[in-house]
Length: 241
Image 1: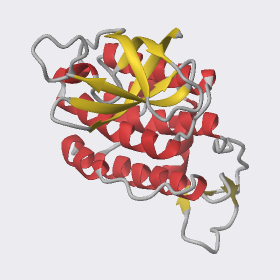
Image 2: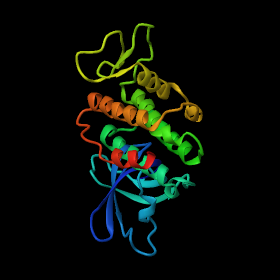
Image 3: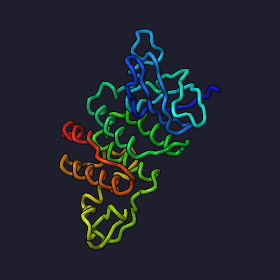
């Protein structure tokens, strides 16, 4: 049976000389693996440039319950990216976010809330001309709400430490090393609460941005099973410095 669904490309793996297996987070079926044949042929209906990280697509797919590999009848970019493939900073941020998403979302079933959040955030990022340097920080912090470990924003005047393990402010530094001190903690929460449209109002120097990114990755490691090491953030830090 054929089904129409939106999708977010997560990972493409070479299968043969002209075929790939692509993992796509679909609105209708969650994360699914699709075999795509002939992607390198000159007249291919589905080309490799349509299957890049976090590309947003409209699809018509064959879906068999309990099958590990599905098939695609039709696929087209929707929306077609205006800036991400041509902007080195944006494309590097997308590469980094794609790696984190691949390691942190496990939606084998449809999850409309997570799907819509990612789809709309990436669409906004492609269209915006501002706030790009802070987008990845805010994106991951806001995503934590959908993954079940949103940071608590409640704080009292004597609470100067944000405990990454507990996800809340504390008056004394925790006995473990996973915490953020006051100034960086306030930026951490601001990035979580500020709409994407106003991110350019948050001023962060490069050193602090690197610190907050490291803390966010620790936060994800503490709250996501088998999260592992993120490699692309080193490239990201070089591009943003």
